[in-house]
Every structure is written in structure tokens, then in C-alpha cells.
Amino acid sequence: MREYGESRRVLVVDDEPALRLLVGAVLHDAGWHVMEAESAETALSMLPDAGPDVVLLDMRMPGMDGLEALGAIRAAVPGVPVVMLTAYGTVGSAVDAMKKGAFDYLTKPADNEELKAVLAKAWDYSRLVAENRELRRETGSVDGFIGQTAHMERVRELVAQAGPTEATVLVTGESGTGKELVAAALHQSSMRVRGPLIKVNCAALPADLLESELFGYVKGAFTGANRDKPGRFQLASGGTLFLDEIGELPMELQAKLLRALQERMVEPLGGVGAVPVDVRIIAATNRDLAVEVAAGRFREDLYFRLNVLEVHIPPLRERMEDLPLLVAHLLEKLGRKNRKPVREVGPRFLEALAGYSWPGNVRELENALERALVLSRTDSLSVTDLPPQVLAGHAAPRMVPAPVGVSEEEAMASSMSPFAEPEPYIAYRPGPTSLDDAERQALMDALDAHGGHRQKTADALGISRRTLQYKLRKYGLARRG
Image (cartoon, rainbow, N blue to C red; front, side, top):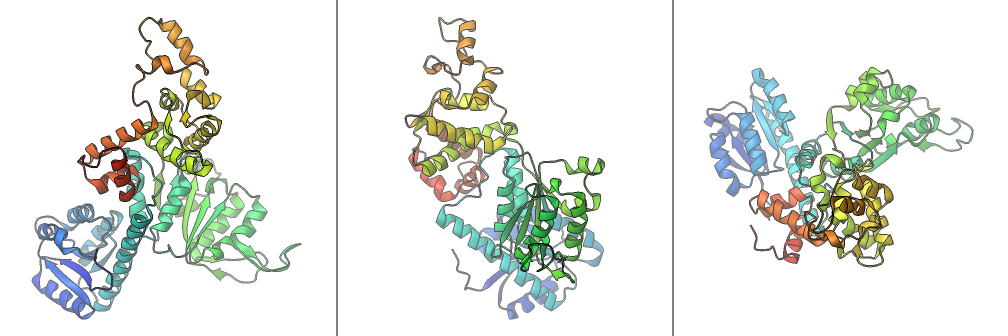
């Protein structure tokens, strides 16, 4: 991998030779290594070898236009910042491009100082992305988004697009789906990653305490205030403030929050002046805020201020295809935590999990798996170790095919009993019979879906490439692809 002490590399894509010459000279003098392409098609052919840190892309060119080229470049080189060049009459198109992932845009003729400043900012972002990617590769860490369904791919895509920006993000989804994980991922992929991520649960405190927690107070503001205390806004300055359960915020505080967001200033309780703050806001809720607005329980202006971009996390019941991967990931984590590794799960274990609706989502799944792990007397988990509500939810809607010589009524009675022995159904249970089988099958499916491409497979599964390589060797799949 190229070290970042070397010359910064920019690919200038424009059909006007004079503009390429002028921009190239300015950037060369500023220390850039400049590469040129007269069309989007040429630029795409150059990308594999050019390895640009930044792409400067004209909006209007013969053949493939800027918007189409933007998508193709981002697909070919994920993470590379693309700065759009546009004439005054097409600024609206440039704004559309930014919504589709462009880093920034400049109008022609670009001011030389502005050009250098924007590309320097894009370079900083490019370096941060590369550093984060290298750190994840070295540590084997993951983003926490386990799964390969279209739902989770969309979540990853939105986080990748929104993370590097300063946009306020509203994370929605039922309780237990992982909204805090999304907030952490957005912070980690932002330019504020070196600043703090401060979390506030708006449902955990009464209104009077919540106000002082958010905005702080000065000495003497109320009985017991014997010193100045900065609020969470001030503590998060330079970083990200995560407002969890924002739908529970009392109406009287919604106006104060709106003012803080608009003015980037907060007024501590008892204070005589406003204090400037520099924070990025990420909010989360399990409520439908549009419904809350219509009912008069949430301010419409605050809703629009928060909902610049919405990232919706689907409930577990809508992505049950990810269940084997989630179970494998959670049991590996829980096994380490409890110093009790799990070798396999019983033949009806995964089927029982798949038959339950999981109203508490991934959080409830993790709790159920930890309970099963603690109760198990061996390194193999049985369906009888699962909580009663999971077994009850499994029994009603699902049936196990009866083995030869067993009546349908007997099979149903056996499948509905939480203490039924699963062994008679091993040969008839669909799907894998152990945790390793489930994970191995999921790996094979993901590899096939991505044509054997290792990095795309790792990204789809929500694991690092190093972890993927380890698992492929573990299951004898290293040569598959």
C-alpha cells in the first residue's frame, strides 16, 4: 500500500484540454501528482492503475456524464472522494451529485485558492478513510452490521455515504435493532473520529434533569448547584452528540434543542450568555416521528431539522436470512465473555429461533443465546435451553415433517413440547444441524453471491477480510471462489 508521505494523487477528468492544463498547473505547484483523462470512460479505464486519492470530475462531458460517472467511480474505487466541476447553470445538478455521494463541488472557472482548499479537505478525508480501513484490517475489528440481506446492504451504503459528512442523521427502527451501532459507525467514519462520541438517552431522565444534562448549568443555578457543570453539548464539542430516544423528548425541551441546533449555541441554566458549541447531531427513535408530529407531540420544525438523512434499521423478523450469521457471531462473542465456547447447536435449535418473531430484535436474540449458553451443561446448545417464549413462538406456526412410522398428530405433539427430544427429527430438519454447518453454508452462499471476491464477501458479511480468510481456512473453503 502506498504510504501517505508520498505525493498526493489527483485525477482530473474534463473534456476541455485548456482547463485540464490550467488546473493541472495549479495543483502541481501545490504539491499534487496530477493525472488527466479527457472523458469518464478513459478515467474508468485508468482507475485500477492510477490509484487516485481524489477525483476532480466535470459535470458535463460527451458520452458518459458526470452523474453517471460518479456512480461508476464510487463503485470501482469505494471511498475515493469525488469533487464535481460544474458551470453556474448546473449547480442544481451538482447538489444532486452530492446527494449521491460526491464529496463537494466547484463552479467554473474555479478560484485557485478555493480549488486547493477543497482538494486538501478531500485529501484529508481520503487519508482518514485509508487509515480507518488499515486499522480495521490490522485489528480484525468489524462494524457490527452482521448480515448480507438487501436491508443491511442499504444500511451500510447509507452509513458509508453519510459518515464523512456533517449532515444530521436520524436513525429509526424498533428497540433492540442496533441504532447505537449505527451512531458509532457514523462517528467512526467521520472527520470527527478523533473527537468524543457523547450519548444521551432522552427517555432516561425527567425533563428538569435532562435540560441540565444537555445544556449544563452554572454555580448557584438551583439548590445543590455548587459548581459549574458543562452540558453534553459542550462535552461533545469537536465530536458527535448522539440523542437516543429523541421521540421521548418533552415539548418544552424541543424548542430549546431546536434553537441549539440552529444557532450552534447553548445557554446553561442560570447563565447570562450563550456558549458556542461545535457538534454533529445523530438522533435515534423507535417512534414514527411523522405520526408524532401529526398528533402534536413532536415539533415539525425540529423533525425536519433532525431528519436530513434517515437510516432505517429493519427488525430482525424482516431479515431472518441473516439469523445463522447472527447466531454464529453472537455465540462466538458470548463464548469468549463467559469463558464457555460453543462447539455446536442442537438439530432443532436454529429452527426454533427462526420460528419466533423476536419483538426485542437482536438484543433479545443475544439475551436468549446467553441464557442458553449459561444453562447448557455441555459445549452443545439444545432447544430446551431456550427461553419459554421462544419455544412457544416456535411451536404454533411451524411443524417438523414426521419421520416414517410416526403419525402427524404425534409429530405435532412432540414438536410443541419444550422438553421433546430433538434426535428423532435430525434427518428431517431442513438446513444445517450445527452452528459450524450454518456458518459454513452462509460463507459458501456469500462467496457464490459475490463471485468469489473476498473483500466484497467480507463487506457483505460485516466482517474484516482477515476474519473471512481465517473462517475460510477453518471450514476448508480457502480455495473456493
